Length: 483
Image 1 (tube, rainbow, N blue to C red):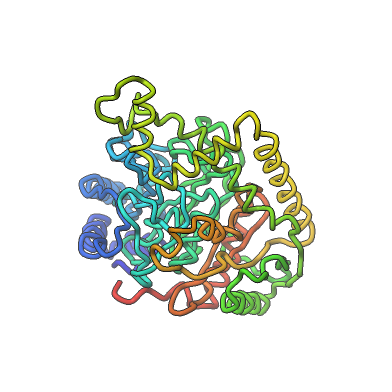
Image 2 (tube, one colour):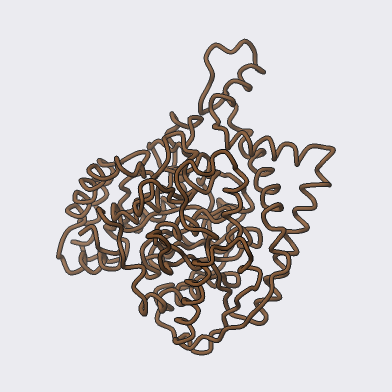
């Protein structure tokens, strides 16, 4: 049963081939057996899962249907979950049990999804490797010596290892798409505002967006259907109708205009990945797509702009973790200043401290205009580049990452080299655009992804292209040895 996709699980439950309770018990046993190798979960919720599975079976017995009714999933551990530890991968929140459900959790629970647990992640979603977690690094099931990508690495590793069919993630600068690429999954970052951020612990509020990680575009469509929608509790949520994503999967790609930016194929890209991207382009041409070469001239400024804006927002968002109301508190503080200093120094790891310091510096009185304001101007230029490009093409295609997964610890002494792994993904977050990564082949036995970007609220178009590509390729069907 662990090899079934979400779509196959929905059909199996509808046909009474198995019950949600049977499926849930099978996957919980598999997690207990295999996850010690991967470290992909922070918290398992066995009792909650079995209770939800029994409730889903009862709902089906009463004639209710639904693609997610009885389907087991995991949640990245920054979605607040009522009564369950929600740690954000940090010592700061190791003792925090959320007093409410995030909107995403509430919507998926209402749809009948079964929560198996909370998945490991880079601390406060800051990282590209899932190495900054207080609970230890997550390992890539394709090679246990390599990283799975981050910050949604726990969700990606668990799905790739067939511990569960799908999971939620969040994407601030590529944190769904990059781990999807490095673990042979399909991962979708929706348009900013498409999925509610209420109850999603914030890293950078103008960039964060929740989305699905699964093995196929079809499964991503099912999970996004359950997650998307307007939420009056989230001031950044957009009141836009949610289409039927599954209904658009089978549209023809005849005449689809695909833009390929010349900036994507610079010296930083592994030439073997470049070759796989060109092979993917040829596959889409066979399906009727038309390729156009385009330019995104301001892409070169994306990383410096992102690493000013995101840390600036992080320094503001993380100021609430001060040892006073919730989270870690130091022992025997001498005074209020000592309480703040030691609680934060003990509660936050090195990467989080680094980004808070960068952000506080960028926002300080003498440097706000020189750094933060300039970064926001560059952000607008990047958005304008995309708007110009989308006047000529329907989607933009390129690599998701410049390299395959690297060895655990390989970039620890040089944080900037890890930041450069986000070069292709962060532009979508700066512009607020939807982006998808799908499996495109292997380099040295490690998966590689191809990224698709579309205009605002065109997630259905991305899923359609990915689904048609997956009907004609088998990369997404391959699973790691031993799992």
